[in-house]
Image (cartoon, rainbow, N blue to C red; front, side, top):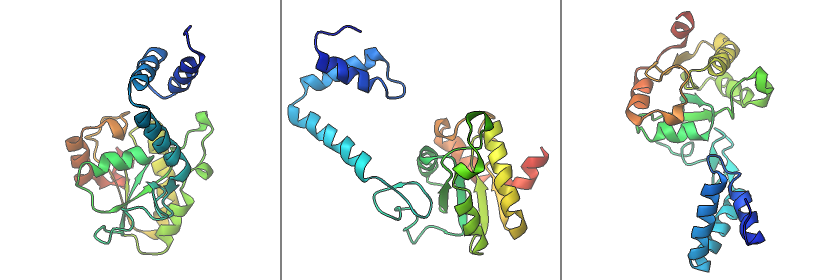
Length: 205
């Protein structure tokens, strides 16, 4: 894309690296910013830089946080004995939007995928097992996407914690096989959590 300004071209190139943003959309966004007051653009740039520099990951559940412990884990009204295991931060946000889950989360940071070179050691599985070992957890809810990678990850974790004889469940298949949680509507996702089934049952299906 040939542009009359190298500065605009550089901004477009950087903006187009964002997911779902092509060169044309990036150009529209950049030209929009040029029309805004300089202070507004500077505030946007400062907010993005500050987010990237100062964001933390909760020491307990590994979701994004402004402090060492996130607001969910530090909330005294949440049931710390029930842990919902999810792939990433977007899944936490999706479930929280349902207002139907009052436990806490554990963010793995991905799914086991040999094709992509992602093994168990690259995920936050060890810290989850350590939580179970402490004996304060009553239930683990597997809420990974219904894909081969998600099912593989669920089963791997299940084998790691099976000997501790705690309740394990998985969200009901109101979520279509192959769907990502972040794209599920709130009602369907909420019902899938409420109608969760024993994990052992899901293995036999």
